[in-house]
Amino acid sequence: MLFSIPIQFVEWLIGLKNPKKKATSSLAIVNWAFRVVIFLAGTKVTVIGEENVPKDEAVLYVGNHRSYFDIILTYVRMPYLCGFVAKEEMLRYPVLRTWMKYLYCTFLNRSNLKQGMQLILKNIEYLKEGISVFVFPEGTRNKTEELLLPFHDGSLKMAEKSGAPIIPVTMNNTAAIFEDHMPKIKKAHVVIEYGKPIYMKDMSRDERKAVSGQIQEILKTTYLKNAELV
Image 1 (cartoon, one colour):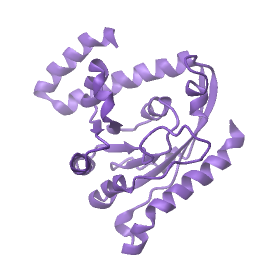
Image 2 (cartoon, rainbow, N blue to C red):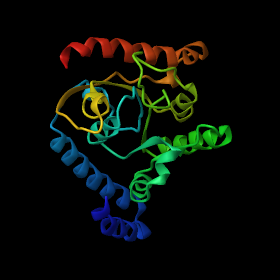
Image 3 (cartoon, rainbow, N blue to C red):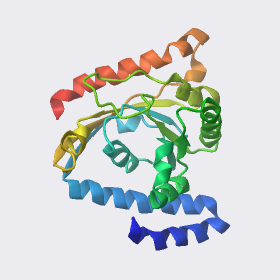
Image 4 (cartoon, helix red, strand yellow):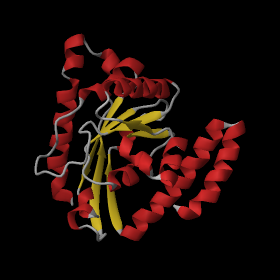
């Protein structure tokens, strides 16, 4: 992180003339750094269904969340610009927050309903501009024995209002890299599966109301199916 400070300054200069070019080059730099982290961690990754991700439009990725590595493992597979919805506490880390802002990440104050609505509107704007968004509707890392924590359904409004498809992303065994035995990092085999796109714009009103449950069922079913692969 400290070594990247001079690079951040160069990226800032690029952004003065061409913000999109800054974001694209920042994506390449961060992806390279994340790939190094994955390599050093000794993580083996099996990917299923990546062909389900549309290549010609922005999408709303919706994933389960058990590890900090969830972000690292999925970000290196992004075919184009994508911002993550992160908790506001991430703003405490100066260098990290700068990279996140360069890459269209947004920061949620979970106790401020008004700010939450503004964040949703901002991400709807991003999706309409062709920038994908990745959200963890559980709202925090799942540290329980339950397959999923209850969803915060407001985040799905981003897909409903923007017309972007939802891509369910199921991750197995990511906590085995770090969280299961902190502070050590250990070799692990993880499985990432991308589900088929879900278009809320093609749904009836009743179907849109049920989409959260539909996505949760997809994530649960896929998680159990892939558990035997790790």
